[in-house]
Amino acid sequence: MKKLKCSVLSNALFAALTAISIQSTPVWAKTVKVTLHAEEVDQPIDNKGTMYKTWTFDGKVPGPLVRVTEGDTVDFTLINDKNNKNSHAMDFHAAQVDVVKDYGSIKPGETKHYTFQANYPGVWFYHCGADPMIQHIARGMFGAIIVDPKDTKAWPKADREYVLIQSELYSNPDDKDAMMQNKWTNVMFNGGIFKYDPVHDPAATRWLQAKPGERVRIYFVNAGPNEFSSFHPIAAIWDAVYHSGNPKNVEHGLQTFVVGPGDASTFDLISPVEGANAIVTHSLKAALTGAIAVIMFSNDADPKMGHGEQILIR
Ligand SMILES: [Cu+2]
Image (cartoon, rainbow, N blue to C red):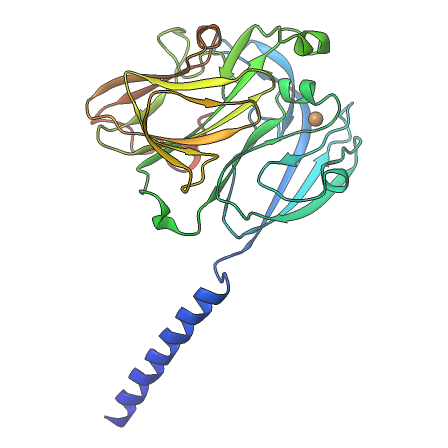
């Protein structure tokens, strides 16, 4: 009896101490190591496999999705592969650091290391900032970092999540003047012309999927380098839009939301019916040259889509 009482007491004491420590220090915060390689490699820019001389993070356009929780420390290393011909750099919009020391460019064969604490939840752009920045972004050196809010109850739980990153395609990757004059030929989501749109391109084999009634959370980044996005779901309404992806910056029931170059926001979409929506930038020259993503709402939706690796569909 005495022993039982003692253990109940010690359990209560332990619970109280745990509660105090959770309130006073972020015991959940962790250090996340992120290493990315600058790689100058060719990548397909459409569903037929047309190759383009891209510059990339880790050989992909967009670069890998980085995901941490608010309060985490990101321990970042950039390796500029020795076979490259150009200097590269890394600018995380989620960071608060020194632009000269941390965002400065490094030559082929060099490595750069810095750390930052992810103090604000949201979806953030990352990109190479080496000179000329317009060309390094246009050729593909960009991606997204999601900083999940530490309070998981700060917003409704999403049933599926997708990342879409808008960018422009310039037909000649060496023509910096065309980039400065905004002479793009196509606008794309996730580095491919009509990548998720089998309606406009029968060669497209991928699209977004969900079930009616599910809350679909889209993390949207506009890499630019020049065009604004008038982000709109055709045949649907944004249930909620969170500017910069921060749950505190919420608006409800919107048709379009403008995301400028270098900005990002998070969009919740719920379909009451089966059928398709088309997610576009309603700037129509951009949409009709490639920036359309079909999302199919079906009771038979693939349960793997919108989870794990299928958040950023390659
Ligand atoms: Cu670069």
